[in-house]
Length: 187
Image (cartoon, rainbow, N blue to C red; front, top):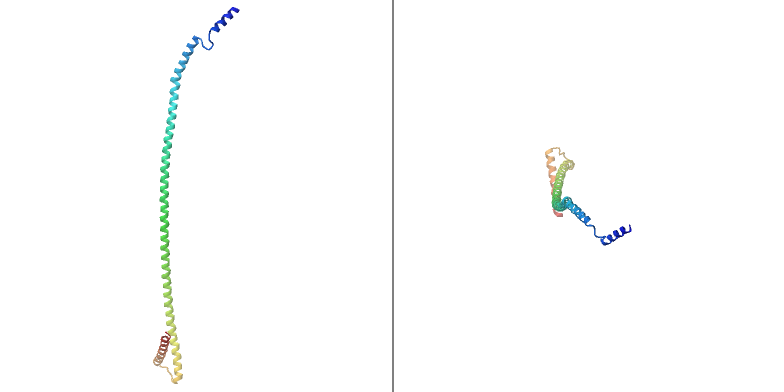
């Protein structure tokens, strides 16, 4: 038994423990090539397909992002153009409102001036009518007083209306003449 053990140990000493047995090497190599073939046929195409899909998705995503960025830029430009147009329109409307306000103010001033002129003209007409009424009333009163005074001075009755009228008219004309001469002297 010791011999057997010694021969086994001697045989094991001759072989390198790092080198596999030739049979194991052949079977391992065949198994490796079978696994390599299966991986190459089954898994590599799927991996390539997945990588291509990912590449396409990334490229598509980049293209979509670039397209979305272009659309956003175009939308921004449209927004800015509309905003500028709205500002211009608002400015134009403000200017129109100012012009209309100025027109309304001018019209109101004109209407107020016309109304003031109308009121002044009406007041002048009323004053002139009141003056004429006062003058005619005063003529009548002065005439009656003059006739009464003249009757007393003359001592005869001035009942005749024609005579009264002539005496009153002459008296008033003399008063008006004196008033005019006084005005000319003071001027």
